[in-house]
Length: 293
Length: 257
Image 1 (spheres, rainbow over the protein chains, first blue to last red):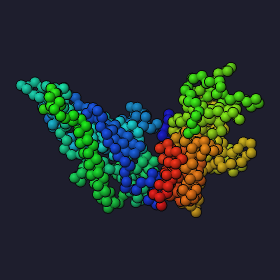
Image 2: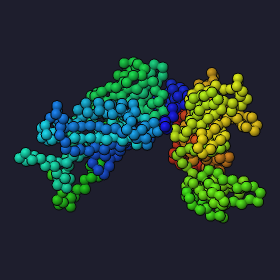
Image 3: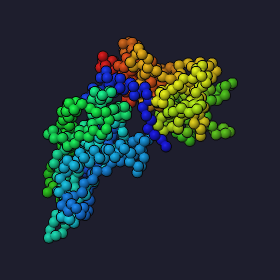
């Protein structure tokens, strides 16, 4: 079975030693992200995020289903992640690795449990019909920083997504095609994003943002903070590893806020650009039968 | 990359005028070519056909993503584990482990053989590479019994902090160009010379280029290792020419100072 090569002893030693001298292998500052780029597909709800050499695709889809019995007034919202063998030889189809499980858990906690998507608005007929929104996350290329990139992709895809318009008339539910009625965006409340800190050194004294895959393999601990641009923290996950000083963690969250603001701005800008690109405008557009309502 | 060489595709018939003929030396086929007896020579990969009339040899220069060991390649192997007689080494995540006999080091006997830890990097030569067998490596020339620079890389010493050096991933094609005897003229790679020369301000470092797409860079200062590694990776990724490499080296040296 092919497997991911562990970094060699030389690399492990060198990365830790260089970080003590504030040096990173790609010449970045310790708290500097690789260039983040977001693009949207022709379809609604497709987001493509690249973070350095890491690339994540997210696609949001919606279908009408029956709600869960215990939650008749809520719609269904799921996030499915997939790490394919294309990403790395260590991943296999249908056998989720620890990385994949952790990634989907973190995304769920960040996006779902923080109530970013108003699931009550997905309900169509109480107890009978609701929208089931599903986001598929595909990791195309893995060079570290998966959680951060995947979170931007999920949030971007959901904010870009438009679900078909519906109406209720005398107990009859009608779902309109895009030609009949312009699809409507989801009811989106806030955009939580993840920032992952990696810790190096014997006591985790060196904190590094956006670790590459090599750095991730060498780090002694990591901590993922999810927050929105208003500084509201949705979750902090520090799963095992070396204990880290509480004051250092507080400092990390304040730096994370700055980064999240940057990412939110970028996301807003890209969404606005995409909207502009789609908006044909003009007289002919107004005359069309399928114009916006 | 050398231009003016014809591009061939797998299975194509090679124009007989391209095949070198030498009165005495037998024709030698390199990577990417296959001899189907009695007379056919067929390319097995897509790439540029290079011929050397003096040595009466021909091979195909291509940039693939997967390393397939072939005899006499210099490679950067990583020790996986040790067995009773040999070390198992990984060359790349997708290739089967290669074997490195305990006694294939300079002056090694049963008592004096080097003890290598799992994860240690070794610069070695492929001694044997048969199709359905694991490749065999050696760190000693079988004719002279000398190491000639092969062996375990970067054992950290007490004096230098960055003595262990670091390995960087590069593409297979770039590794091959780096290994050419006249890499500047034929391969179009002068980045290492520039770093050690006036553009780089005379940096002191050593490198070991492995054909399996890995370069080891060692130096006394960690800064130099990072600089050289970045210069190599960015030259490879950007497909830079000599002028571009000069600009890159100057930019990196300014940045890292």
